Length: 224
Image 1 (cartoon, rainbow, N blue to C red):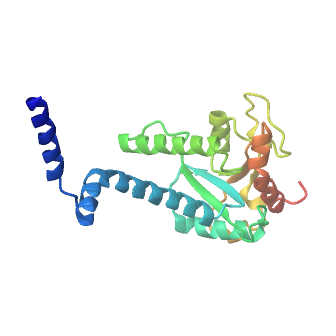
Image 2 (image 1 turned 45 degrees about the vertical axis):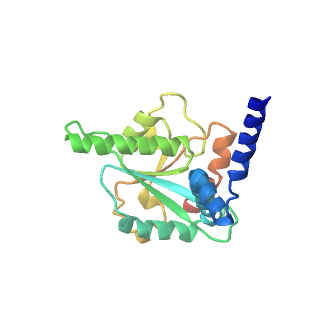
Image 3 (image 1 turned 45 degrees about the horizontal axis):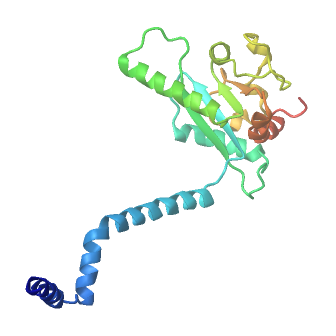
């Protein structure tokens, strides 16, 4: 009994020796064990804020045009083209503004002797074009080599909007010369060897994605 009593007394003495922490000490202890979770939460909240802000403030283009040429084209060089296209493009998405995106993609389908650096640029731009196709960005194409573009991608529609048969190579029936566009003289580019074409539409998703491109095409070439 004496041993049990001493155990009981010792436990109670130990409990009585435990000091109540102050509010400041409790805050310090809490922060010591939870600061990682707080920072992770702040990071997640900040990331979510950026995503929401970008979605709210981002201007969705009424149409996107893929400019696929063998030569590099700067943003300054495409600015007159963008302005000329926006001058005739209707506000197809109804957001109160007209915006035509120009997606510059540098691909030379005929080059057979390229440096390692040029090859890397070529591969990166082919990936860029594939991404444009996959995400259905550009419904209108502006090309300097429509023959080899069609051979490599099979992505051009006929002028009436219909889809060519598999392997079709009659690219002349799929494009309009740059000079056929009434606004070509204001567009800035040296477009003697450029052609306009349209992406093929094979399903309802394509049709919805390229609705703005159809409207712009009709504005570029009325009566077709």
